Image (tube, rainbow, N blue to C red):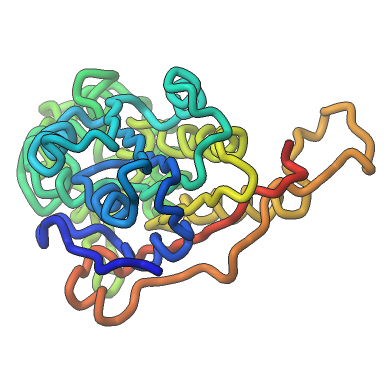
Length: 319
């Protein structure tokens, strides 16, 4: 039975928290991984269901997340926070001697409300700030640096592949043309540049939405990270452990859907792996249909409107 859930912070409400807890099938003395800690919403909800013997391993590559650990969980011995990328899941679990002891993993993908609300992070076209977009500001190239050096053909590819942007060619040409005059350094400049390049608008969607998404995904290697953590999750889970993933756009969801379906059919092996048909076994069992937020949640938290939750359970045949 799920105990009453308390929202940590209305400004940073966790998405579909009740549905996540139900999909995880919480064991009060179990060990769980919140692979995308963010502002701590899902971690708090899980901890509220656990006994003193339960444990949560929380991971986030954004160093700003640590302030929520100190704020919300100052004396919480059941919580361990690690500032790393979730693509290091296997290493992190091994380092804590928890391999195949984890009974549930939740992954809440995409950019967090906290990151969108901070203009200095450069994630939002609604707030003017430096064009950064890095999940971990200490690692890698900023979006501004990349935009001011990238070739037109590569920019067009990124916009099409990661943003499914119909006007990728037009936007790429205008970016190259603009930066010959002066560098692109702020979200406001990029947002206007994209908006001026898009001749038609999608109802209810800002014209820069797809371009910002594409650039952010590229800068952070998000799809590569996702594919990596999904495969590692199966090895990490105990038999009967649950994997719960929330995605926010079609590229993420397509990746999660494909992985879970192939794992459930036993078709997740590399094509060149020397195994016979009788050795192919499913590793996951799908747990029902994908779930979307309720109208009530969407009304109270509009950013949840595009969320899709998929869940699966590790089978004994995965060993």
